[in-house]
Image 1 (cartoon, rainbow, N blue to C red):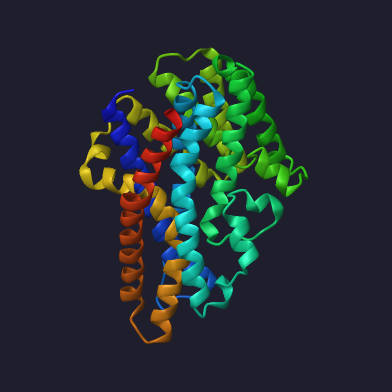
Image 2 (image 1 turned 45 degrees about the vertical axis):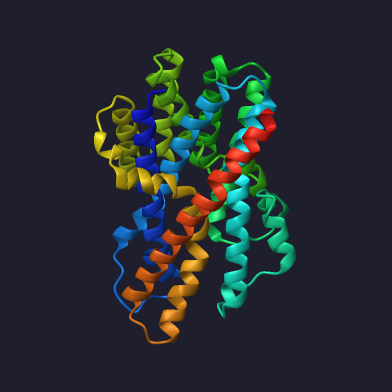
Length: 326
């Protein structure tokens, strides 16, 4: 894979992460607690940074699992990338929220321990940070990709995802009842984004077939079944943007600032929400203008993310992968 394209994906990650942060600090905080200034509905669109993450995940995971020789290698790769950073973020967030007086964020120690597994939602434990709900879906996607790999079906992956996307769309279209745990395990609400990421990787590698194109068409149709016309048009724009990226048509995503945000995006995503809410809430309690407390929350989250990346994420990743190989 061309490194310039990897840089573009980092830039896209950075944009997605900042969109989610802005959504939480402005729109979502306003819904939960109320800001004392007008918050435009436009900030609600920051939520869709999550869908960008899912497309990127489909792209990157399909690329990654296609390069490994066995399941253990893939598991070690994902573990080293995800868990040390996640554990650090969970510990810091739990300490900060426990020391705060924000009742909404108070959780017991058992819930904290359960969160360390990253699959705690399946056992009905609350998230230490509300943003962790996406990790439940990411973990499910990894499990399915490992199963497909073990079945030696990566080359025929469209045969799995075409009916998967169709069934998920029909469940939404007819509002069919399905248990919440099953909905998350089978990624019913978001499978079209992971599938689209796989499609875009195959297009970039020129390994696509008519079935690959059919899968992409179904993903687009699914957007219009599951969402309002306005939202579906916007999400279709994400697909077009991703297509432009894999064709090298959006070099702006390679700029250093965006790729830096992409590099810290995982850490930033994990630490920003609850800690940010504590800071913003503290500002309101002490008469600090909310614009200043929101800015402080952003700065603290960026600093935390940067330091976690430097002192936890990179060293842990290097240590685990080197020692596993040896």
